[in-house]
Image (tube, rainbow, N blue to C red; front, side):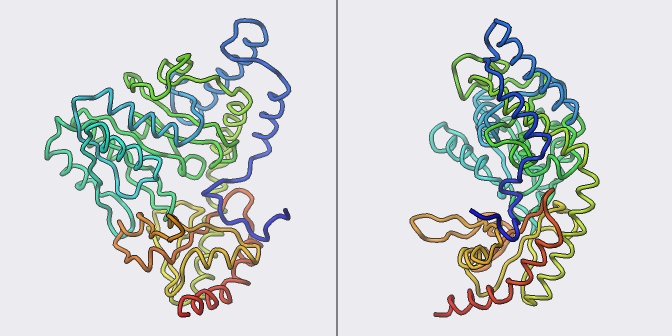
Length: 387
């Protein structure tokens, strides 16, 4: 398969950083189970623990607070299910209405099968949870709230949440606060200690690391009930043989992404703003979604009136431009994005939306290619919608 002319889907997966490839490749040459007591096992354990220290240092955490997982979905499940079970008989689970399905689905599963009372926090037209919204929800019955979860930055529209303020409100009532920071780490300054969060999710493949490696940062005193049972390798809250090569790649990626975050963010913000301006010029009735200012540096999310997002995506893909749509597909029928619906968009606008997301490999040539093929693709998508 040839490389796309323009890869504009870094929010789904960003290409691995050279530092991560090198670290992972070096460790792949060595056998060893980090739980084994012999020399080879101890070497693998050393890689794991040094990686734990590296990630903790980069993200303002203690090494003991870094719990390795297979990625963001597992980390979110451990936080949502594990903290709920640990806090029973409290039943209320407060999450934002624009969460990733890795948070929404385990929360709703708790509601369907474990007696939880799941409450979705409303957002404004930009996708932001206002502090008073959370405060009012808690104060209806604070003693029955098991946990609060609000993502650091939205994966679809890029809106950044006031995590520190929201965490402080939860703590005023002694309630644990979890944040899915999968999109934030590497794009924004992230400090676990500074955020006030009790649990924070990150994953490798969103920041230049490998797929299949992530972490849940767990503050001292947070002891979620295990979702996986077995060897108890990670603080007895997460079992499973540790993937030392992937963990080495994750640590290298976190280090490089955090080190270069400010410079990369400046470059991507300028590139994103150019993309937004040129898309608006090319398609004058396009609608930019999300906060115009408080958004991820690499995120540009649009609704294209008269278009089905899936059709437009495939037309662009045929021309070598790869992007994403927030809609879901069930039984062959496109479903509107729950994020846009929560923000007040109608179903047609929510179905006719695309996300263009930039990352460390993005250049002006990617934007040029998008603008070159976008007008014709939109016109064709609109004709198809009328037929």
